[in-house]
Amino acid sequence: MGGAEQAFVESAFASNWLSTVGENITAFEEEFEGLLGRPAVAVSSGTAAIHLGLRLLGVGPGDEVLCSDLTFVAMCNPVRYLGAEPVFLDSDRATWHLDPNVLEDALRKRAGKNKLPRALAVAHLYGGCADLDPILALCHNYGVPVLEDAAEALGARYRNKPVGTFGDFGVYSLNGNKIITATGGGVLISSNPAWIEKARFWSQQARDPDASYQHSELGYNYGFSNVLAGIARGQLQVLDRRVSERRGIAIKYQKAFSDLGGISLMPQPEWGFHTNWLSCFFINEREFGASRDSLIRRLEEANIESRPVWKPMHMQPLYSGCERFGGTVAEELHRHGICLASSSSLEEVDQLRVVNIVRGAVGGGPQSRLGGGV
Image 1 (cartoon, rainbow, N blue to C red):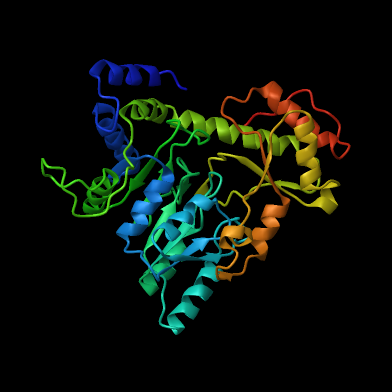
Image 2 (cartoon, rainbow, N blue to C red; image 1 turned 60 degrees about the vertical axis):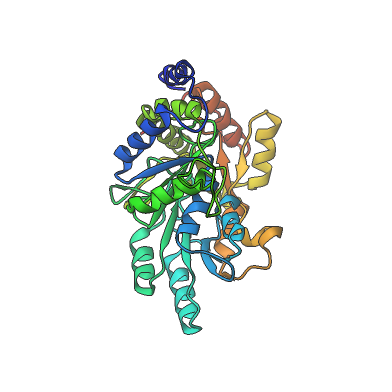
């Protein structure tokens, strides 16, 4: 917490507006719009925001939605909620994100069958961003709308513009593990204010403006809490600080491993500003001298959590029967990628423990201090 959250939460209690209506919700949405320059609606989760965005794009039974293969399952599940099917697209080794060449192949083949997808859902991973210029150009040429899943990338920029503001919709998460948090929640943004108002209407059970609780459309219980919105308002005030802290942690790791072979930080392309929400590294086992899985075990023995990079959707039992284009790069990143401890509150002494366990796994000498971050 940054310090201002408690005052906003106390104001919600003082007003006695604790549920899905209140000053904090309205103010948070306005402040979020001020940050990103697009109308915003706060909802119960990032997954709910994706669901609403895809529905507004007309996704329904029998449709296909192209999706990043390397992502978290929450991006794809709403496709199924709507009766559609995801089609997975492989990653680019140079970015870890959706490969525009794979997208081009998929769109060309779908156009040849006169069966273009209803939408593209592209994930921005671990605080980085996909190479959006070619992706958006391809989708524009084929008339395919784009939803940006920026749940992991609030604060990231593509060509100096916030990610999530390029497509038809942008989605963000306020989950407990994100760079800023309301303990839960999500935000949907769009340049189309009418779409945002429709999403707000659906998120509140699609209740008609009628005193008798009339409902003419299907809605959802996706409202955001005025109490949690208070936390979110306080968190917005420290977003820049959290980004600086996360980037500093990643760069300290990178410098601490610079004399070791076979361990490299997730790519940081020059066209993007990476928040390094998580400090992710690729392990080349032959050059490093230890496997990714053995490194996870060594850290676990020291009571330090680490995780593999996301398991691609085509490898998930839930989605194993879905069509895909490529997948070998996503598989490689999953099998050799590791997420190291990255909390904004991580003390240097604790990061040093992580560093020395990683170095010790391959016989590297211990370090007594860490270099500065960026």
